Image 1 (cartoon, rainbow, N blue to C red):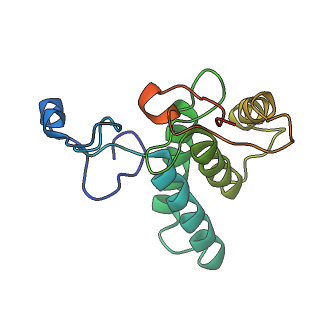
Image 2 (cartoon, one colour):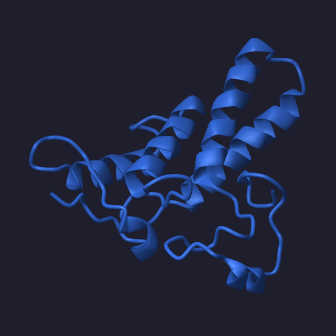
Length: 149
């Protein structure tokens, strides 16, 4: 898409009023297509593997795709270092996808501010037992909420 992100099904661009038809009470913005960090990260992983296997095939197009996908991923990061997830619950899940896409595009902790911010986010929300968990309420509130114990 124009943003460098990837949608789930079809190109983004429907008018926002269509979202009023959404029958799912606990999820926003699922009727009209958007670019998703999860789909973009998955595509980044696929394209970087393709690039390694076929380095000369459509080299410029593949490089542009990867550059634009990385830019979309970095630009969609939240201030706290997370990403909002649409296809699962929610911030931990999407942050995992974003990091995996960036790493596939040869981004590392030392050369990518987004990965450093994501690492800080994950360390800041780690539970007392050493694991991670997130409440389903993170989705409708669009704010990370630790799991309910």
